[in-house]
Length: 295
Image (cartoon, rainbow, N blue to C red; front, top):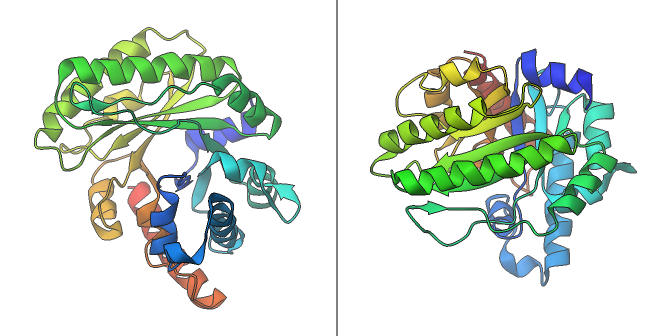
């Protein structure tokens, strides 16, 4: 484990950029960027285009370590290069930004009011490759749709079971049990989720470290006590479908909670912009998200 990266993630100001759109969400990300689905004919062409988009973002002078602590990558991105360096190495060596990797394989069907992660059959290989490519940590997402105690326990149990394997490989896991922002009983789900997370944190070994990525809570500062747990490096907030303005507004009311936005970060960026226009929009978004993250 890189101690400089750990210190940066644990103590410094900033937020994490989520650049980890995968197979299912890539077409939407490209569409938001102004690239229609009829512009590419297969997955390879699609991933080539999204890597060009991510490269443009990462290489932009607006994308810098003054505001951004880390970036979450998709597996395909980890294997690709920027200026002849693997993406994770480019992020850290050229930008001083800590690299993470999305490791989940998407969501299973809804059961007990939740979407568990699909089995990650090649997890060991992915983690070994991440270590070889100098990745610092991982991210994996589940979704909670209803305040179902059994379902929420299943989500948290699954997340922490895999998180232990990840930590034992030498990586820091980001545990992401997202509560659907449109859930009618979102606040009750958050109470059940916090209870299960607390139980799991109490069972971790003294040296085990994790990060949490959670929906912005209904009640401000609801997760503040979890931030003081010695196992927790940082708690991140996902935008979850909120617009950038709304996400920033809600985030700013939650002290010490920092952003890990995807769509809200990329909002307003298009392939047709000049580099100057692109940098200007990205810079404005980054500064606003940063301001909301340091409240």
